[in-house]
Image 1 (cartoon, rainbow, N blue to C red):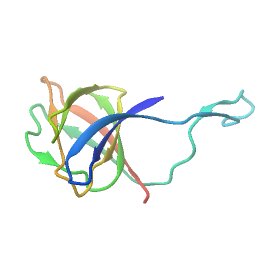
Image 2 (image 1 turned 180 degrees about the horizontal axis):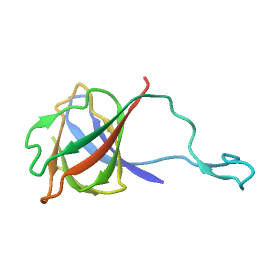
Image 3 (image 1 turned 90 degrees about the vertical axis):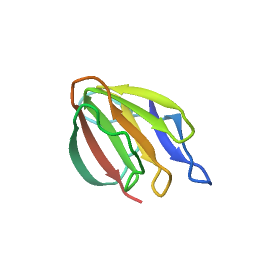
Length: 122
């Protein structure tokens, strides 16, 4: 499984890259057959957000390392290196750009973007 990571380099510029989520067969839901599952990751917070159409032309950094799950709408992310990518319902991002120049999250179209943000423990 692949997700997109926003990360910062040593000079606080941000970039996008695809990263693999390692899955291994696990007896996760017995008595059902084993399924591919990632290692468990300690989480700290969870919040649902709704971003209105046109939000947000400003660059901002994440306040913590967190996963973002897009629940509805269309979001364009731009990093400080000028790279942009589009994300839609079902896409997952890893925000890993705390204390950087940040990224821009611009809502596309007339539909609000619904997000679930899940903080990852240090």
